[in-house]
Image (tube, rainbow over all chains, first blue to last red; front, side):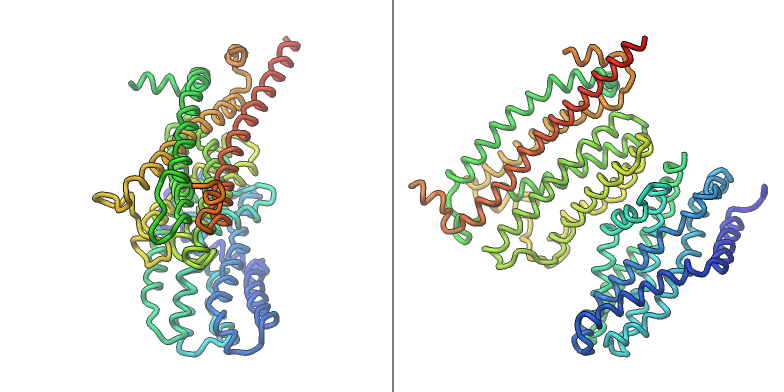
Length: 227
Length: 244
Length: 56
């Protein structure tokens, strides 16, 4: 592997993770099914009336997306940590930050992107009007990307710990709350026909911040966890 | 000066010095807090708009201030421990967490008790209250992470990363009332220029703030001494250190 | 000012006194917990010294 550029290494890792997921399909479907089930719970428990569902739709969509991301975050590093591959990444001499960014990108395609793609369907079922669906998808793209990045930090800190998945959720939730607030706000504004640019800009800012800082932090956390 | 600092980071020296320093912080803290209580509850005049309910400020504002200050101390010592690999700094960070968490809880509780009679609501999801609640969760997450990791070195360093990541919340809490339209009132003491609060009302507040800060140092030193004993497992100095 | 007037806090007693009680509890608890933590650590350290003493 000597002489492989960092970029090429990242690309290889990205493709490898996608290929592996092809064989372990449940890693992809579990968060998605969870998202669908959670969003179904609300019409069942609250009211089937679309007008009432519309009021809670922003919150329901976003809480479900958040919980689903927390569920998925656990699988980012678990299998690699268990079979020793993670150590190989650290020892490989390639920049760990880039490798983790590649892994997070692949992870988002498998867990975040499906959510975004199915969100118009789910949102409509919750009474969200057609003109707001674009904002729903936009906010969820920004949000799930950021959640994958923050989730990577949590996953790196909790490698190998007993009840690590629960602890991961506990650690990531406070960091994810601002996302939840602005994401739901964006959808809320879109539903009533107002411009959602403000919250969307803030979501974008949070994404940019996470993209620059999260892989770096996660790399430091990986080194701390497996040394 | 650096030699003094370097000496202090040696556990046996710290243990002894800290032990001597605790009463010097504890007693002035107790005096200041009692004086502030008398000043705030009895001597300070009744407020024109809020009547006697404003007296909650004398415990609410200092608690909130402490919740932020303690987190900064925690994050800074965690960073020092991580960068310069000083174990004592990690011990300081660990000692801060329970103190900060309880002050955050006190700030939220007294805030709710003040909010209900004055603004008609126990809670509102505005920027300041929400981010203070997030601060509580950050403290609890820090404590949970520490207790979940058995290896002390990994626990130190992992929780340090968490503390540093969470520090972004502190300026958000502080400036939330400036940046957003919140129910919580704007700063009246720390803004530039003279404070907008009258002097007889201000003095007990400042005394309580100072008292809480000295109290924090005393409690923190006690906790760190315990941490030091726990960490220096087989060091010979412990025998003499405990004898004192 | 009479004691009852003071205690009633202008009618806001049910908010003011619980607030002070919460904070006082926090202050007291932190002192107790810190001292207990130190005491336990000292006991453990003494026990370890005894064990290693008898082993030498």
